[in-house]
Image 1 (tube, rainbow, N blue to C red):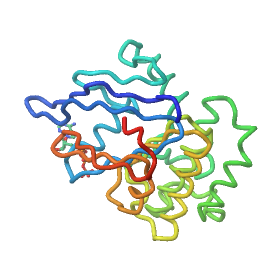
Image 2 (spheres, rainbow, N blue to C red; image 1 turned 180 degrees about the vertical axis):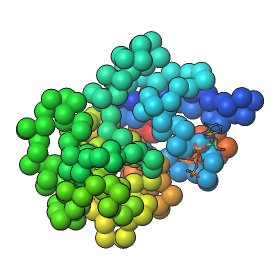
Image 3 (tube, helix red, strand yellow; image 1 turned 60 degrees about the horizontal axis):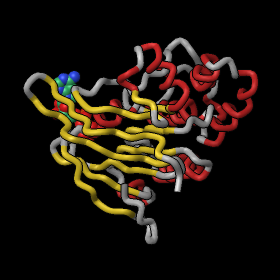
Length: 231
Ligand SMILES: Nc1ncnc2c1ncn2[C@@H]1O[C@H](COP(=O)(O)OP(=O)(O)OP(=O)(O)O)[C@@H](O)[C@H]1O
């Protein structure tokens, strides 16, 4: 069993008088995969972005490796985000003036590690079927291709926590399977993987599945027999 690398404590979120999330407490361990499911508008993306420190909760706390994020300055939070998270979001923008491979290397530039990982970036893109798209810019790529570039970017530095918002959207079944395999591989190497998904095949590969209903968490099930550390 891995350590609790990401924890939310009684997260609430409201926009004005509208409550979006209520009382969300989850613990995610290193080397495990959590799937967040639920109907459209139930708050899944909002929860994921609060977990990734991209948005502030109205109340409650996010602990990253035991560090209470709300206690940090915006700069400290950004540093924590860079150190711990790989983010694969629906609206995660690639930089339009950079090519696919350059976009993949952005986190490595920020961490001053690009020399060490250029080959790996190429290998990731090739693995995702983009060997002949490495030098294309985002506006020259399809949605599914953009998604794979974003995935390669998130995986490059092997972050301890991967957050993915519907990572198999816009992909054909073969590519969707590959993406699931990569996320499962990341889990095998010790990452905590959290996916928002409508895809039953993706949810079936998670260790834990939670369901959001109008901003409230309903524990759905644990997929793997013998895995009884249900949080
Ligand atoms: N900035 C905002 N201001 C006001 N309401 C918002 C804002 N962002 C999201 N919402 C509302 O919060 C609710 C939850 O949105 P969220 O995107 O988290 O849902 P979701 O479960 O991810 O939906 P989907 O499956 O359709 O992506 C929705 O009703 C949405 O309209």
